[in-house]
Length: 284
Image (cartoon, rainbow, N blue to C red; front, side, top):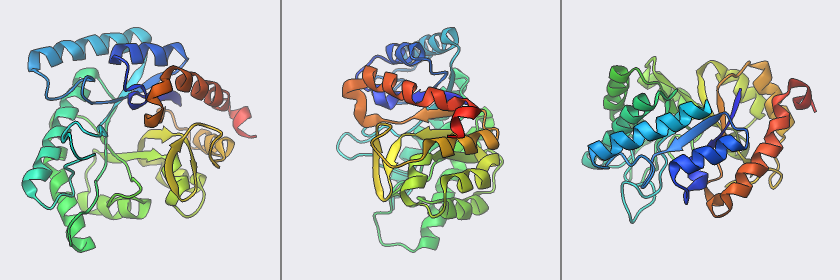
């Protein structure tokens, strides 16, 4: 597996500076969150193309693998966080999110990324679970068609507080979508936060579908991304399971609220996680 870091934890850095900082601390992968000032998909096309070329060159020079993340808070709406979403009652607003995801797919392809990570969003209107699932599946279809054209896998993330928040929900959505490019992003902190059973059990169950992992510390029942050591997660057990499933992709630190101290956070995360890459260390 390859330790990585999400650029949403370096929100006050230029993207190329963030990548250099991440690489300098020994990380081997980067999760690039598209955002204002960070490969903004709505930038003038020529300027965006130049930015993509510069970022790809930086990544290639550093030997970093990469995934594209779509969780920017205010990129689509400066007033409301993560708005609109694929769960919006208004189909025109769902289409705005779908268009953004298609643009993200194009950027991911240009970067030679491994996948595009995405999530559902919250239900904010009166609707049944069945209707909501139909709405989400319908909203995903044009995105999946675009992914097919680009040959870009999608990695769907269950997110606490959103419509798709657990693996059980993912299972139902997967049955409805039934597409070879539809895979998983798993945030192990989210699993610790809301799922029943051990993180290891879920990793074993979903191993063939996981294209992208997020990691941080967390307290059960509280969806707050914490620095390692500040929560209650058993990291040797998590890494033991990852070794046993032969996970070989990126496991990306997600500490989006640590941007004010990004350099220290990146270093601290690397020092905490790097020893766990050894199968012997992960046995505790």
